[in-house]
Length: 374
Image (cartoon, rainbow, N blue to C red; front, side):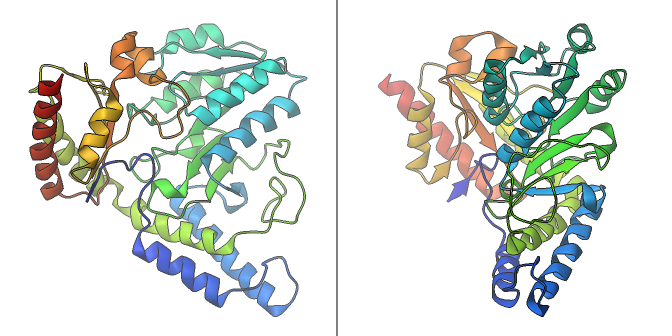
């Protein structure tokens, strides 16, 4: 099997899975219980949280455990919107964002909030001048992904942050789900940061929301003593400790892994450029982990299933996307055909050069077969 759909989810690392199982077996107590099993679990929870904070360059009391980036994103948007509605009702984001943000914005719009979408440059980056023209004294939140999930475009978070800091009533949220473990992120540039562990070989069902310690927001989930006052629910200790292990495996190796994946990327892109009916959608601002392209005249699901028959797995749009076309691709190219035929290869440092060679061989065979049928 060749798995090139890592942006949708990664396969759990054996070390992470072993950690999860070990904690399940050896730490049965609720970490909020007063007996010795609870105290033992609490000590492990604090140990894991302190290490997670170290890997991310944040404070341990800034970590909120969630079920994933979707919950983290919802918590920020609704928590800010309803807590600070007296300050203003204006929110800025982009069409490159994950559906958990786009759909939440639609919900808030129905509840009286004004949502503006900042323009995107031809290379996929945020149009800074347009952002400057949109932001005002009524803006309470700006949310921009560090790396979007479809094109892999890396945004200039520092430049965006400088603009937002001129408006002290406005908060800056960064969805770092596709960036954590792949590129370096500086939390000092933002107020909130979301992520999911299943994107970095961790377990499904846990994510993080990093919130600067001095900011107060409304809860999304109430009730039940937890590891923070901002999210109710029994702390999922096995998931928390396994998240520490996942970060331990990827964070120290970011630079070496990036260079390695860059090599894989260049070989695949060089191959794709040989075909007349292929349009490369990723830009020079895209990180090497994501290659987005369109095979014109062939439906993406047809191509993906043909590759699947050869035991090669690709993606189309974001796995959580709700539309028929890629909004991310359309926002750059303004071409419905290109946007509706987009396919995504998402690599990881665990993919091998042999897999890339095999992919190129099979891709050529499938492409010729489907074009001939057409």
